[in-house]
Image 1 (cartoon, rainbow, N blue to C red):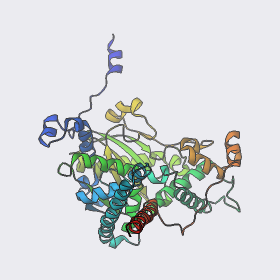
Image 2: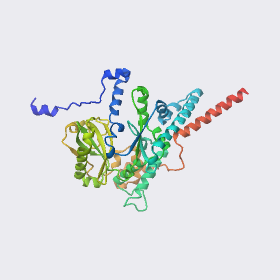
Image 3: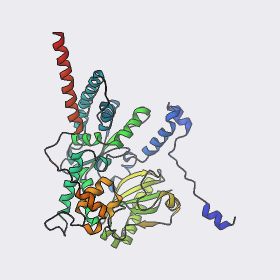
Image 4: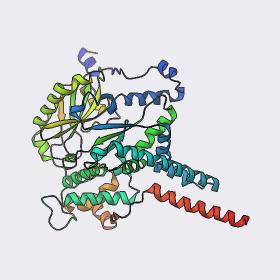
Length: 425
């Protein structure tokens, strides 16, 4: 084999300073069956906001941390809709139903107090609102994947319609009046708006609907709090983010070198981004080299998200340098060497697509296609739209799944107890 072919097949070995050795896991008492899962969790923790916030404080959003104790983690797990659905939808005996009610009642009391703690921390931001997440991941899955919750779907469509009515091309109807990029941009704004919270209760409610939160806390429960720390991260909400959905960019850093950058929203064409691609790429690269790189030398390799607004650049968050971090307009399979060795490359969506809704979840594609001009839609989609209609949103419907289920179960138990008492008498 010649030297050229050898060079083509050569791949860079990823060196990870944050990966635990087996011996360290044993010292911490981690079960061998959980060892690999624990290593991945600890690796993820190395990029949490609290690990870099002080170093980048002037370049990111104001942030506070609420550390969770074992009881609060338990309550967030038991109150989560995913735990409830797995538990109470089974045909349990009456004793099991009573146990579930007691668990939910106890969890509610704990979570009420946690909500008050969040209220205290966010007091100075109560007008702007907050964004919440765990120190691992955020509950951003709710707005996209909570599609069985009719209220959530209807709320998202209501927000989308509000933004569509602000479009220059809006006249007197929303039905089939916009191109796909306009609709998708407004939907992205709606997702962002749904994450803006104004009190501790709404923060808890959002976390209780999230499968991402449930998964992460389930791991903590298995590892034990003596081996990990868990925080609710509270960040001041910047309302400009809602109106500028395309101005988030994802960078890939290896050995402290920013080697690749991509438009975060990889489905939508934004003319202002495509037209100013070079200026945006150059400004973010310079910002990173001048202000960020040296502060994060101890982390070395990571995926970093930026937000650009009015010639100012913010760091949103860091993620592990791993295929679990979405590659946006790149792929981990094809561009791993680029991520690790460069040369620097910046990608954006450079032209309008006929129907970018094809890239999102099928349910949302169907609902949002109702606003897209028919000339951009397939005959099959037009036929589907003729046989369905989106649910309507009622702002007065403010009982979430947990609360509603809790009261239903309370009624069931009350009837049973009443029956037992009447029999005894």
